[in-house]
Amino acid sequence: RSKGAVDRFGGIDVFLNNAGIEGATGPRIDVSPIDAFDKVMSVNVRGAWLGIKYVAPEMIKRGRGSIVISSSVAGLIAYPGGSAYIASKHALVGIARCAALEYARDNIRVNTVNPAPVESRMMRSIEEGLAPGAAAAAKAHVRGTIPLGRYAEVGDIVKVMLFLSCDESRCCTGACYLADGGITST
Image (cartoon, rainbow, N blue to C red; front, side, top):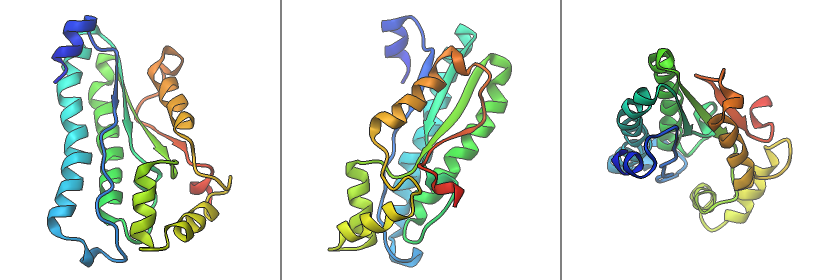
């Protein structure tokens, strides 16, 4: 809950809603167990929804705020093998847009950051799921679909999140901010 931050810092100005798991990956929807799908939706979607539910009242008290939700390029496009993850990331875009409208009158901005693959443990797991035993080949394939020809670094994404957290973005709400190396341009 947000109470610890309120007690320690006197309120909440920015909330980085960044919980998420990739879940099982496989060649088709029918290979994933239902409980695996439910877990991804629970962590990625319900977790983000609960975060907003508990942080928004604290931001309303302050008369302002910025909520930045980690989505993914998978929230805007799809690829075979990741239906639960992709569905959850699409849902985050919908939640952000809805919350942006609901809280605009309270001067609370809500946006998503939608990166393409990021050099991370999660991408290693996804690569292995897409090509069991051939993760390096999967990575090369995915990298080949990115016009800039590389995965993002964590710092690339943090800079977009910092922009959305500060006053320079005071007119930005209800939008998806891409850090995708051009992948959605193709």
